Image 1 (cartoon, rainbow, N blue to C red):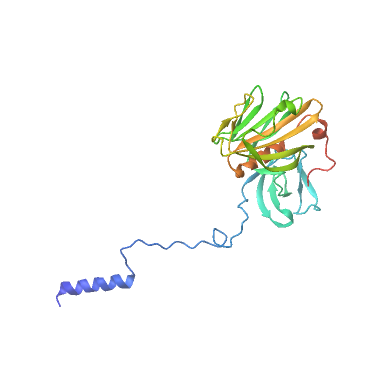
Image 2 (cartoon, one colour):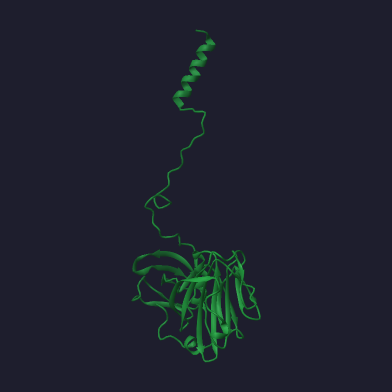
Length: 269
């Protein structure tokens, strides 16, 4: 055997011993438990996020994750709290930190919401509300329209003297898909959700001169405050997961009428 042939055989043997291959590697780093593997916890990553108090009544901060634990502070509406921990037991609890207080609040989505919010208030429109800080608003002759900087969904608030002045509650071409009683700052209304008929185009103008556009889905709540004041809070949206924006809106809204302005005997738990 020549010297060159012997060298070629030696190189081939070393390549086999080392596992060398001409194909790229396909193996991946194993996914740790709880990071996308089967059987991982469904609890979202909450630590490090912020929550804003929605309820106008204020929210009690407890020393422990229990409604019977001592109340160390009460966070006013609009207060931002940093989430330090989460416990799913007893309905769910967030451990939060404010400017000077650390404690536990109930994880009720009607009381707090994820993210940062900006207050909107109008004496002429007869309401105040918290709006995501990525949303804008437009004061129009017939309503106030709130919309995100990206996306077509809109929340529309209209006031009138009577329910009939607001016109038909169900938009033309839509069918009711859900209905439930909802209490909004002390006033009871009917929360209705509607779906657009397939015969309608993808988007249609709203009636009454509003700049809002009717989308695939629509929801509204009509409230009567007294003999000469009613309000409609409506939401034009495209997918069900966008409903949370509407829920946060009506959970934080307040009105200058007795049932909403009356102080509660005990703040929210």
